[in-house]
Length: 275
DNA sequence: AACTATACCTGCAAGC
DNA sequence: TGCTTGCAGGTATAGT
Image (cartoon, rainbow, N blue to C red):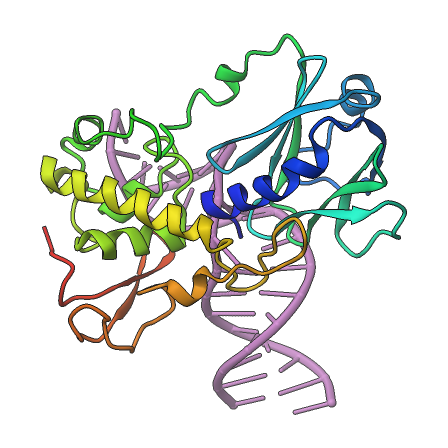
């Protein structure tokens, strides 16, 4: 489900409710997510602690605790992280419920169970947890020079390259298509064939598309909801994703769908330059 | 080393 | 209606 904008929208919604609150108790469904839910670590490091602040790295959402520990959520394809009134009965696929000291609870619901919850203990090095993740799209490190150096000699399609979390954090299947449309570059172009100017366009497009998606509350294709169970509306702003057969908003050519590395890919053959 | 296919899991829509 | 099939926002791992 969620790419960088959706995770950020959830974080922005949660932050005012959870910041400064103590975690009073925890309910676990007992079902394993992508990784086993660390029940012992939650008991030892989370219960009785206050949430000092929230964070995000790539598609991971962080809740940092007063004792130096952190909860690290990943929502996989179908995960939801919502604020609910305390005491509501568990719904189907509710896997983690954290009761807070203000009458609310934070609930992780995930039908497909590709998501995860992991605990960083107070002494654990968070840099090593994220050591394989590339720079954030809004950071200075996400530069033409960096991308050029990562892409040199690479034959793989630029779309697959952009979706690689070790290259850049947070860009998934929807936004990869949208960013390449905005940049005017065909998704099948070999990454190594882009020059400095092309990467500059992609960087500019990435920031613009992701920023607008956050402002729109994320993209709801199937079932994304924010922390208050509300849908986003960036799906109305998508210019190529899921729009095969429609006319390109920029040049009128029919938008095409294809498959790249097993993922649906959308582009305009008229105005996205093939390199 | 670089890259792709597969596996993980449930739900839903489309087609028959 | 009910069955089957394919597809869905991610990513770790197996395989070429």
